[in-house]
Image 1 (tube, one colour):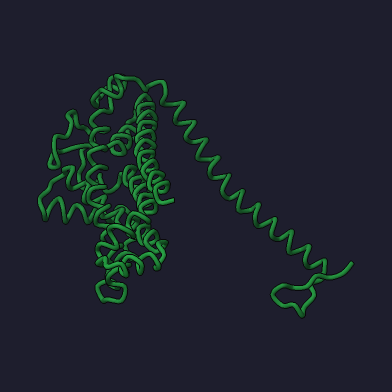
Image 2 (cartoon, one colour):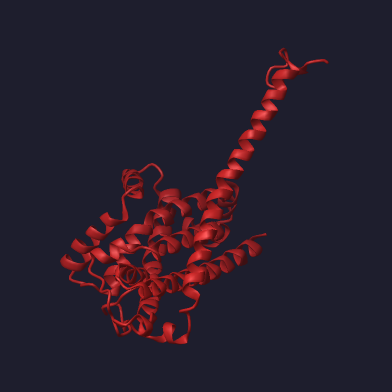
Length: 299
């Protein structure tokens, strides 16, 4: 059997045995990657199904519309659910404009400035910081120094700091996907730099920006440690009525139920996890629908 010519070095002929080993190595690597993806997904699916089975028996209108109670059979999740929606709404209102604005500045205006370098260093350093550190920062800055107290505003500001690096990095990657030829064409037609960004660049990269929004919301809605550190109450029987109102959230309520010695509260915690996952899927579905809308419009 004849040897094969190496495409990278035509003067070298690759023996057939060496080519066979290369093919088997490639197949082994591909299957290793597939297993590395499938096994964690199967474990996650098992955990979700197990939690759903444990909590389905507790899911009813009384549970969704009820307030916390010392008796597991009467405990509900409405204040925590409404508090989480308030919290995520304010977090998105803070993090998305700031994150997208920072990304636009870094990519379109200040690529070589000292301020841009300082912002990039800050983003790189903050990306690996544990969430509990953000809780300490939120406690000192928002709760004590700015005197927000353990309010929805303090919680949203703390979570906005937590997810801001995700929004900035995903938005920057989205901005880089827009060809420079489109920018040059807009400027050549007489548009200002801001008009070019507003009418050409941002609409083109909106699907990528919304992907970052999905990732940030997914992380923020499940955070517990920062909320516990800023003093979010575990037992709230009323609904928040504004940004300065006290509140509780689904992760805090679930954490409280898991800490209870009674086994019945574990069932409540499982039901709360199902509600939390359903809320997350609903919010992500809205963001995905918007992303698909912009992708279709840009085609």
